[in-house]
Length: 128
Image (cartoon, rainbow, N blue to C red; front, top):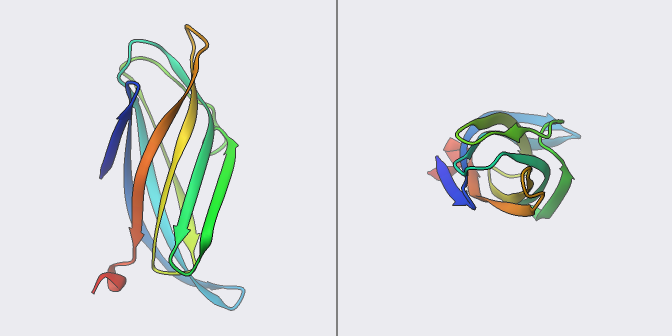
């Protein structure tokens, strides 16, 4: 598990290899990830947007921006956490992701960024 804390917000990431399949006559590698966002600060915060840089050893880096995470803009109270799972399809068995969440402090209305540390994807057979 990879973990990082930014401004009292702890982000932990766990990855899994989901398998391979053919799509558009090409092999693809499916990876899952579960992220827990824990509010260790004294203020309530809301996640409003995300930014991802997706690295695939056989393709150029892809950037993805969007509102919230998996269709939600969770409010996270002090001492509470929000956990969600998602995934990524790569053209190769090795890759990585990193990014950040845009958050807002609900007391001060201050917007700030919370870094998501780089987490790696590797199919088990690719590591030998």
